[in-house]
Length: 210
Length: 210
DNA sequence: TCATATTATGAATAATAATTCACTAAAAGT
DNA sequence: ACTTTTAGTGAATTATTATTCATAATATGA
Image 1 (cartoon, rainbow over the protein chains, first blue to last red):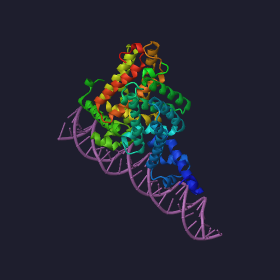
Image 2 (cartoon, chains in turn brown, purple, green, red):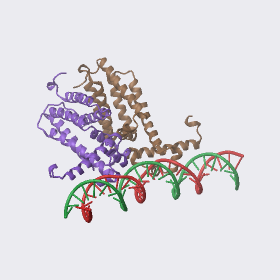
Image 3 (cartoon, each protein chain N blue to C red):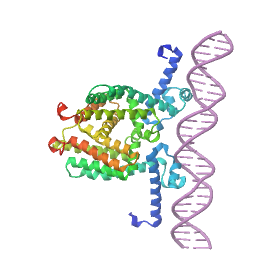
Image 4 (spheres, rainbow over the protein chains, first blue to last red):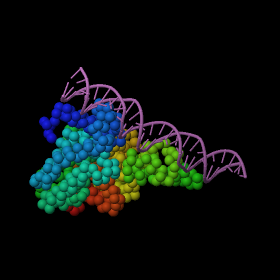
């Protein structure tokens, strides 16, 4: 079922659906799930409330779809990097840069994901696609760091803590910086995060400049 | 107006008020603001809904009071440490330990604060007491790190990033660990965070063991 | 052009949850 | 004992917002 097999009408339908998703994403990322009404989304997308319900079963299902799209995009970007055969430090460097790019291109997605993250994890602990993907990535990163330690590339740090530290720092930084949507600032910051974490992980003999 | 100048009745009133706050805190910290109804709080606290409204103007005001109490407690614990005349590395070490203690004694407060942090900061950017206190502490920590660098105790790191990294790691760790309310785990983890951050901040000559 | 199918509409409805208030119960004062 | 004051109650009211659905607009194809 690719784009060319669809009629003009069908393509239009898809586009309308996307418009609604886009409007919803904008609002949710600005105000969070509970502070956006279906009315608000209707106004923003310039469709009637009823139309939204032709496309989505409920407000919640619409939100879930967004969140899963978001998780999907994050997954598709990060997983190949994590699976690649590069040296461990290079994987982590690439990862941080990929995050910067991801944040640049999908800043609303990232905001949505991070802003709801706290309460989300209280309410839908393990059901969502998004949560599963997060766990998948977290686990993989831990493995990479472990492997880096085994291969004497990294210093023998505490894997749990450095993983939480790296990920929470990236997330928190992107979230704070995305408040004023300054993409330059995000890129600069993530470059510094890369330096801070990966250089301090490296064994002395592997470090470039102090 | 201290405790001894109150009549028994007045003391009881205060106690009832506290009971309601406590019940609300429990529920909010488990499910977040929007997923707890005033009914729920009434049931949990074993008062009628109307009684809650004798004590608090609205659900929101009740929540604000909790959040401010929380911020207040954090402030009272951390500020004296940040203002103390210890050497900079010692301040940070003490800070992390204080966080552990804070988390141990007020795990629900901390959960409330962190879980709502994302959406809160979208909605009430700078109004709340809690937000002001957060900024105050963040700023102070940055100053301490700067001062540590000037005094050649710390390596010349990027102050912004290390501050975000330190704080977000603490918060994220406490939040995740508080999910299963294992106080021991939190203490262990924070000790490792202390090592990770402060040791990697120190100039080589100041470090104890590699 | 007209019948049919599809898509869009938004006022009406339903569901949920905050808030009020007339009332009861308990305590304090006389 | 009785009056007054204070505290507590929860069904009823109100507000908000998600959802439905009868209707209108538009497109399709005979």
